[in-house]
Image 1: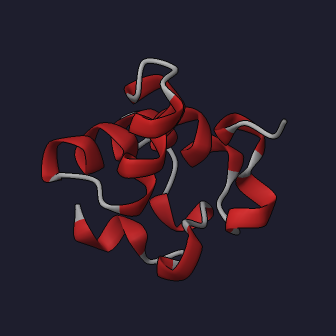
Image 2: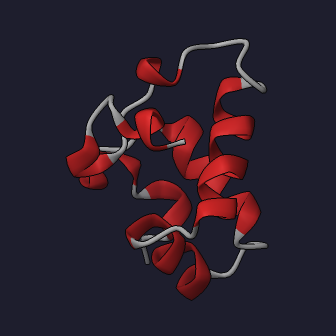
Length: 75
């Protein structure tokens, strides 16, 4: 069985973003899927903070599905 945590390649999403979502979901598959599909504004900020190390790395270094490398522009 493939879990959300191991779905980054099939979702065309960087593992750093997958890890951040997984952490925010508190390791809940359904919650992780919802966050990946439609994060609320607070979740999006938290994902940005985790993936970029609070801005130490550029969000454009990480891909998030159809949003590609521009996902961080929404933060």
